[in-house]
Length: 216
Image 1: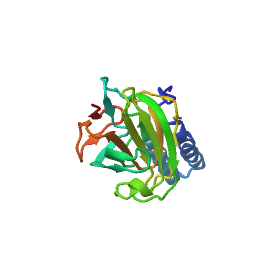
Image 2 (image 1 turned 90 degrees about the vertical axis):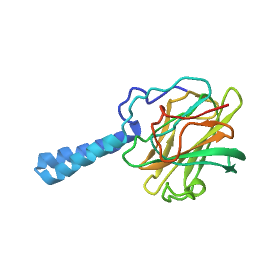
Image 3 (image 1 turned 135 degrees about the horizontal axis):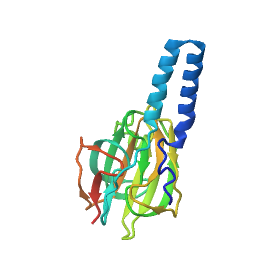
C-alpha cells in the first residue's frame, strides 16, 4: 500500500473546506467587510490546522503496534469483540478532540484482511456505548505471524465523515496514513490477549509514533 498522503501538508479531503474559507475571507476583505474577513481568516486557520498532515518518525522493531491516531487513551480493557474478531481482545480506545491531528495511521505490519463499514449513530465518541452504536469503519490486519489486529475508526457527535483509503489484500505498513475522520472522533485498536501493553489510561499518544504494545 502506497502512502498516498505522504509529503502533502494537508489531507486532500480538507482542500474544499480550506479553499471555501479562504475564498470567503478574500471576498470579504475586497468588499471592505473587515469583521467578516477577520472571522473568515480565523476559520481558514482553524480548518487548515484541523486537516494538517505532519510527518512522523515510526518506531521499528518486530511485533510493535503504534497508535493509529493522536489523542488521549480513554480505555485499556480486555473484552469479547463480537463483530469482527469474535474473540477476546484488549481494546485500546483513543479520543481525538477537534485540535488533534485527524490523519489515521496503520498500527502494525501485515496484510489488510478485511475492511468493513458500519452505519450507526453519532453519539459522543468518548462514551463507552459509542463502541458498538456509532457509525464506524473497521480494518482487520493479519500479521505475518498470524496475529489479528483490528483498528476501528469511530465517528462522534460532530464527526460525520469517515474516510478510509485501504482495501482488502493491501500491504499494511506500520505508521503509513490510511484515512481520517472529520471533526472530532475516536480510534479503537484491538490487540490479541497476551500482548505486552505499553500505555495506560490518561496517556497522550501520537499517531504513528507512540507504541501501544508489543505482539508476542
